[in-house]
Length: 199
Image (cartoon, rainbow, N blue to C red; front, side, top):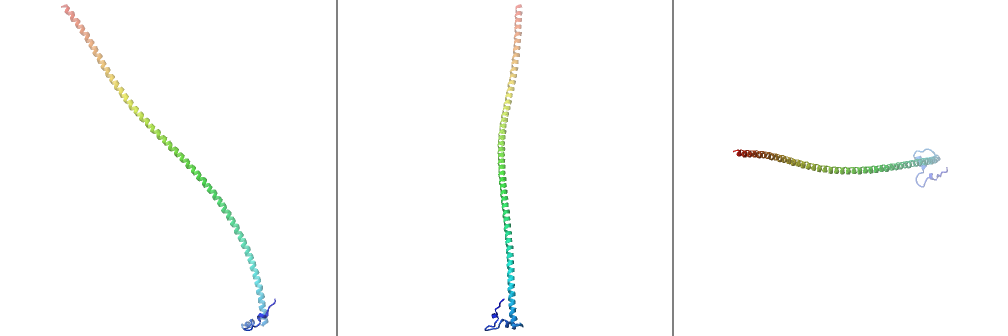
């Protein structure tokens, strides 16, 4: 490796690097100092190259690991998206089921309303039947009352007929008595006349 010694020459003002080193306690020759600097530079250069290579390798490894991580993240993101799609599809199915349940509930409610309407109509019909039955019963009561009155009238007529019959019987008895009396009177008159003839 070529080295330029010009940098170690004494400048116009001040001390050289070697002189600063001697003042600082360095005991070697100037050539030894220069060789040491050259070796140090080579070591530093090699170390820099190794460090750069290691850094590049580490960067490559890190980039590969980062890419692998990004790929894994992308894969997981795809899986998450697939899961979300499955969840969304399941949610749609659940919503469809809920809609079907709501429709069935509406139909059940409609059926219950129809049944309630039928029950209301049945109750109305029963109320009308009960009202007509009450009217029939009232008519029967009126008929029974009229029948009672007719019976009372018939009883009164029978009583009157009995009285008429009694009167007729009385008249008949009176007529019989009158006839008997008349007959007796005629006999007495005839007897009296016959007696008068004798005298």
